[in-house]
Image 1 (cartoon, rainbow, N blue to C red):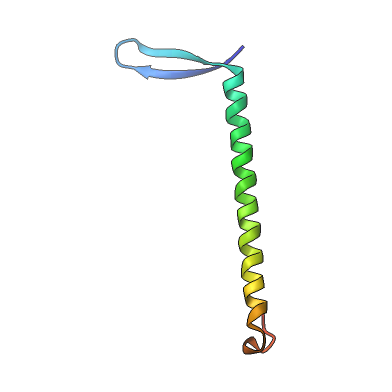
Image 2 (cartoon, rainbow, N blue to C red):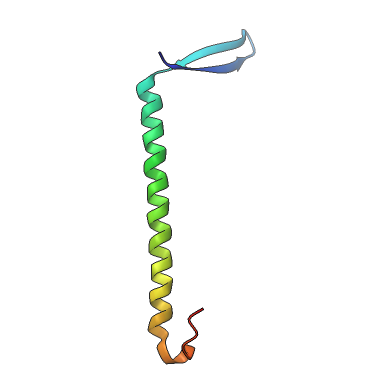
Length: 65
């Protein structure tokens, strides 16, 4: 069984279309991979900023935050 999605149409009033379960599964996993990539990008950005702050060294007088 697939997921049913309601689509509005001018001629027929409303039309039901089917989404195959493998398509729904593919969309789900694609979203999961996108979320994972966003988390990795955020992690890398934070670590880059921390590394750049620590490389400044004495100019910061030890105040990294």
